[in-house]
Image 1 (cartoon, one colour):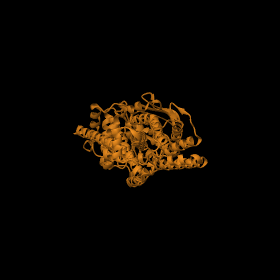
Image 2 (cartoon, chains in turn purple, yellow; image 1 turned 45 degrees about the vertical axis):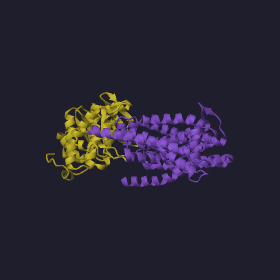
Image 3 (tube, chains in turn green, orange; image 1 turned 90 degrees about the vertical axis):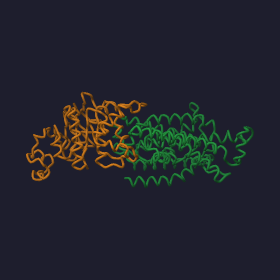
Length: 338
Length: 249
């Protein structure tokens, strides 16, 4: 009886993985063949032919962009799911906790000052984004803590406060470095336009390692999503796990922010949808969120490229337009449950 | 044996627990009695390792609780508190099987022995038919039994309970305490905070009377009398008489 139920859940999970993987392949194909300046027929010809300008657009511009979308969607969703579990709070995600803006400020400073150093091939924009992203997530949790406990409402409020502060910092940097302001503006709206293979070279390993390490903590996240005391009394090293997850989430988010700017709400929405269908267990939630996040962001970016073609909407604007109403929906639901 | 040696803990300036020494013998049920703010829960949290003593120490089988690693501690001590359901909907089986966490290494999954243990305690607590229900869909009494089943699945030698029967009706109170009594006869050592004096007198092997962060007295239920209880709770003996069913006190 119980074996059946366990096997059923496992079967549902595998079917979910397969469906989403197929969806990702299809979406990749669609995205590769659509876009401004080149209709699907021409794209398909270029794909089969493999020479000329059309082929360059396909392989040098569209494909790296698609890969970046996949990585960004996946890691943002995994980080969102992990933060929601860690804080036992369905309203968390890297954006709402101020990490995106924090990482954004670091990156903006690096752009404005024209930093050119690099470490192990990782560029200065990314390094600065890491530093300020990690800093802001710890700042948010420190501010939210009172009497050794982090309450949901104070976590959200301090996330908003730190996010606003960092956002103001970004504006200040833009004002002071007007010659580079346009660069920074485009990038605060979240856009995949600048995706390149060079950038994927370091974003991909960081993102993949971060997601894998977060997934290693599935069981701890299950325990923590029942509360810190509950987890500690069940044998989880809460302080260590919390710090590891916070750092990983900040690094994963910062890697995306450095590459493609601030893309909000993906990390908030995707884990919810997955939880509704597949349940809350992190061993299933995290991989499924990664896949669904990738499909979703790729869909959003493809739409961003074609809705007002030949112009392009920064994808962050689209995700926010879908995400903000979703946030209100979850907020209403969780208020009702309280 | 649980041993508190000159243990103190304070929140800010006010002592919550002041220089307390206490022995809790193996296989016994020890119940902490006392008015609100007397330090009962603080004492429990010091034994669970959730709080670190600011002076003195807490030993469990001669090991300092503060120095135990998380998993080792969970194998020694399990805790039952008022169950507060989280926003994420796990099934009863998922929650109870979390009691096996401390026995599993990172990539190990539940094996048939773990599942056997989880099922055993779900059965003992009468929640085996609920195993696939979501915890948000079950009643308060059932939730408390889920919480106890999870703690028992930890197979620790020590069990701490903070108001385990609050908000439960009389039937469920007896059910929970009978199970604890049963486990204690099989060797489980229990430390319990309880507000219900009548139940405390029925189930305790030893009663620890606490007030203003200090231990006033350690007594067996037989040694309890009206004078001690009325002094403990600052009530008159007439007021007390309305609360106590056992008229021999």
